[in-house]
Length: 297
Image (cartoon, rainbow, N blue to C red; front, top):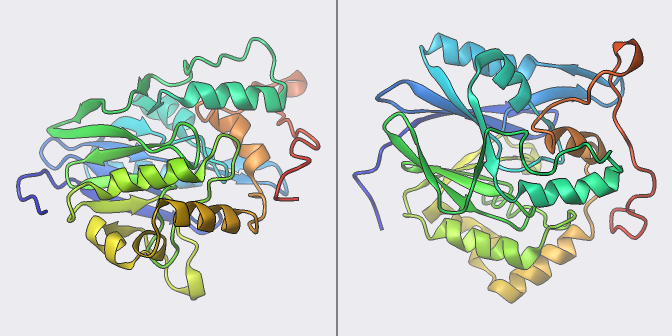
């Protein structure tokens, strides 16, 4: 199936080699309004230092191309990098958004971190909580939201014209699919989310959230629905039962992401660092032995 009438937004990806992540600018060609998808706040776990270098790179590109930032969109609370949504909102005033089921993830991780009762789990850290199937406008480009759970409880895909930002569902065809063993993750749900994405028109451009550069090749992050159907071995060679067996087996061999315990407490807060304490310093919580029976051990 091929569509010739859809808007083709301008998309640029920015690869972060430290976390193998890609942050995106998607721009409506008619109005010059743009959205940022999954912006990164830099973090060094050795020193505890944060910086806005990656997010500032986005801002420079937006300014250089005469664009105006309208939306800052997270696909889900990430386990491998801090979100820069809060920083970008402070600098630009643009609206922030995420899938409505983020409240379930907040409640889950609030317990893991033993956060105080005052920590809100109603998603109020974002301006907009999108429901499955909801649409909104970016200039003249209609953006729609698809619940794409499985990697996390609340993961969503943003579809803008002929482009879809599919986060941690499918990677490039030579990398297969995303893990589904985080708290709240589920391989069967991930399979069904992937099938929904592959039901989009074959020429839909798919922009993934990570690229781990198998074999040391150059970083890549754009494919199409048709390419994924034909070339991704996790899609092409399996049915649902086979995929679940493959995915759960692979997940048992994967190490725990090195930033997960750092990142989730920031990302369930909309990309906001913890409030300063005495002396103006900020502190992260690290729960010890939170996953004693984890396959990551």
